[in-house]
Amino acid sequence: MAKMTYIKAITSGLDQVLNDDPKTLIFGEDVGKNGGVFRTTVGLQDKYGEDRVFDTPLAESGILGLAIGLSLTGWRPIPEIQFMGFTFEAMDGIVGQLARDHYRFGGQKNFPVTVRTPFGGGTHTAEMHADNLENYFTSTPGLRVVTPANPYDAKGLIISAVESDDPVLFMENLKLYRSMKDEVPDEKYTVPLDSAKVVREGTDITIVAYSAEVNESLTAADALAKDNISAEVIDLRSLSPIDTDTIFASVDKTHKVVVVQEAQRMAGVGAVVASDIAEEKIMSLDAPIGRVAAPDSIYPFAQAENDWIPNADDIEAKAREIFNY
Image 1 (cartoon, rainbow, N blue to C red):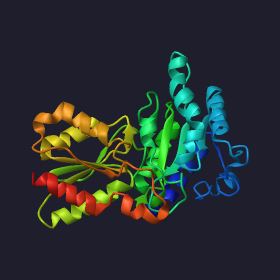
Image 2: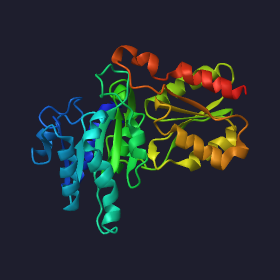
Image 3: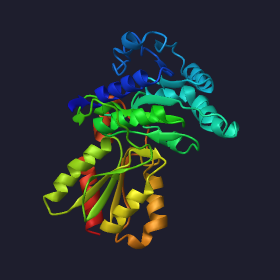
């Protein structure tokens, strides 16, 4: 297995699905000749031609309209929304149309659309380029939402998303694009769209996180281990649906839990996870459910984002608080 960055793993997965299925199409702003603003689709137009990997006008609503129409006629579109902040321009297409259409058609039509979009802070982007907007979509019935935290999952999840007959929002963390490498098989493989993963075993406290905060949680777990506090770390991977079975099994083992997200406390999916635990596993808990999240403020300008985004120190402090309750 070669070592790949997160972004190269996504490119490899997209290459795989384009090669396997001639009905797959990639389109969006600058995804063709330039290979995308982050070069995620670099080389794919040269390999598969302008009919299958092509640029669109700067019109997110049009991109989603095209994707929905193509999916109705047998294609598997993979539209890119250049930054998650731009999904507001495509909100009706994603939430008002795509997520509802399988129901509208009485289950007689599938809408296999995978909407790719970068998100997340830590790279000093401009306003509307780093926002964590997952809560707008995870509260939408009929739409899957996934976000990988490492290169291996990035390739496996993008393949699973494209091959699914359900519409999927595939969230790619900007900070992870080139900041980490992992062993990634050259051949095709898939990662389930609805399963969390225990990425570190532990016995004293459970830390539930997703996307870049998984890696921050692992760093916090290393620090806790120095004081013989054994933290189990769970990567949600799927934000809708949430794999509560994996979370509940961990809570039954550790009896203490911290839920972590990069998004503002009022956003993200941390509140949903905490609510599910409280409803189903209250008798397994020996302490309140801890939460780590960004402040409930507008996403700050680049100069302040490193102080705003939750980090390993924040997670460690909260885990110690809950552990010592």
